[in-house]
Amino acid sequence: MRRRPKASFVKRAPARPAAHHAAGNGAGDPAWMWDEPRWRAAVNRVRAGRSLKPPCWKNGARVGVALSFDSDHETSTLREGSTSPGRLAQGEYGARVGVPRILDLLRRHDLRASFFVPGVIARLHPDEQRRVVAEGHEVGMHGWIHEGTSELTESSERDLMRRAFDTLTKVTGRPPVGVRVPSWDFSATTLPLIRELGLLYDSSLMADDEPYELLDDGEPTGIVELPVEWIKDDAPYLNMNRATAIRPYTAPSAVHEIFRAEFEGALAEGGLFLLTMHPHIIGHRSRIAMLDELIRYMKGVPGVWFATHEELARYCKAAAS
Image 1 (tube, helix red, strand yellow):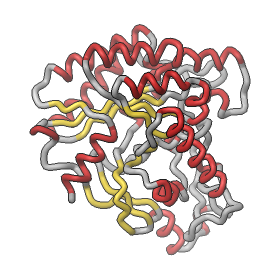
Image 2 (image 1 turned 90 degrees about the horizontal axis):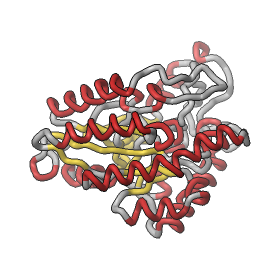
Image 3 (image 1 turned 180 degrees about the horizontal axis):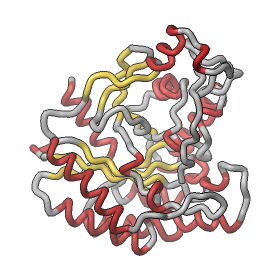
Image 4 (image 1 turned 180 degrees about the vertical axis):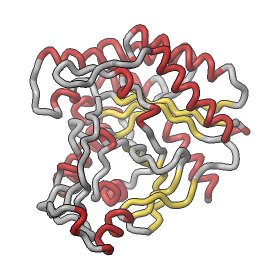
């Protein structure tokens, strides 16, 4: 589960944050006091570079479709320092029921997807991750305990990213090649750390509908961004937290209508349709039925290429070279 973004000013220094400062925040002075070099540096820190949208998709397909599942499970609760058995059970549903239902659905449709897994979840549910990989799906990084990345110092963020990378490598038998930052909370030091790990792609940012190359202070990095958007995420529509105002206000049929419209828009533009879902949310009966209906519809459209995030990133990078 992702926390809804809180309205706040970005307080970021022109230079990389010092190790003792939180990576997503600056000195604490209000933004209206910044001079132009400072706010320009903040804007240009991580930026969208050249488009990596290919002239056509694999085998001449008209649209690329990437289904992804963020296996937050119990970390949705643990990240807050809570040990509530009730809330932990809500996350456990994702592992106990959601992932098996998703894997069954993907197997019936002969599709491959990407699962983004926090390191703690890989430790709690190692057999789940091995099954995901054994059935041909990708496992990517999703933080250590679904932490708030911009609240971390650079050294803490580096430690948690390395710990997550090593854990996924050990559990799945294969180093991850991509990352989705928890809550899409990309900090000022996240990109350099992605580069340190030698990852192929990120899927946390929202500067375009189509894949693009990330710029680090204006420098092309070679890292592929597979952009996300809250519109194409199940959580804003279907999530539930009894302790907050977060409620599932949208019927599955309405979510299907939105997702289908986004897919049709990508189809018309020859672009990418990337969908983000969560096993403890989409895995419930009425929601998995909606996803089944959406997949059936997309499979009935000529020229659709279903791919993992890794496959898409490699294809886009090769087509642009």
